[in-house]
Image (cartoon, rainbow, N blue to C red; front, side, top):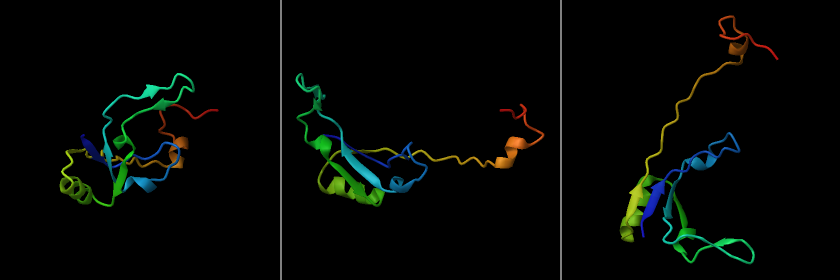
Length: 101
């Protein structure tokens, strides 16, 4: 049962980056999900797929996995490339295309 350790990405619904600082340890699914024929819900017999542990640092997550002898894989986060933008650039004379409605 392999665990993956990663930093979650920013949610697309909001502009904040509140829950992106912590590290998460999750187990990979051992079996595929099944669709219930009566209700249409998906279910799985794999209980480890419900485990979602959060840690403040990567070292704490790795230490937890090593102390419990859990094989793990660390997924490094991609870095953000901030782009500086100004509202005044929408109306500058050096724009490629003129601003229209």
